[in-house]
Length: 271
Image (cartoon, rainbow, N blue to C red; front, side, top):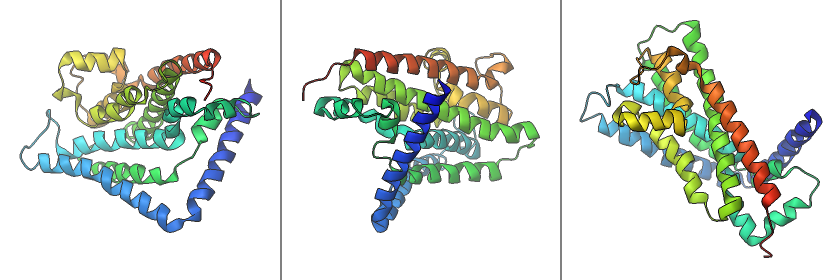
């Protein structure tokens, strides 16, 4: 099992490096695409800044606090999107028949799909979100204890793991639908949009759903409550603020089962 995992990781790194070298062949194009993505995603935060020109707080949170939520969610989604964003194109590959070619190669399918056309230009999204996150950290007037400092990389690692699981679940869903990428995007890119704002602006029923049904709240909301020293609007135990590893592990297990089930069920379209 360990050897298989190591082989899959090695194959993923080799294939990703191949696509990185391809993208760097045309450096000007790569730089323009990366910069363009940085600027486009930056418009999202510009909209929040404009909003705060009319209000002092959003859901009880100040601009630096909202920036912390925005930056944390954005970095997590950006990293997951960079690592395996192209897996969302599984349905297209099934329809075109190119997925069949992957099945006859002596490389794990998951590694092939995750590394396929690895897009290094997605660093633009990560950079933009990281800049906003860094600005919020420098601006927030907080008592930075060692626990709160460690909570920031904790948020990034497990938030990314949760988004990785959602990307995998969305891809596995396409084994049954072959054209369900938009539905899957609702939980990844749509989930990121939800997580960018304080959950206090949503009804309590929505917050419960994002905690217990679709656990997007563990990406950045609960870790951020700990960092920002905020009370949980649901009044849940403080341990929930540290439950992101559990949510990530459960989602990863569900995603792994769904992916393996989808591969076993797969029948070529004959394209």
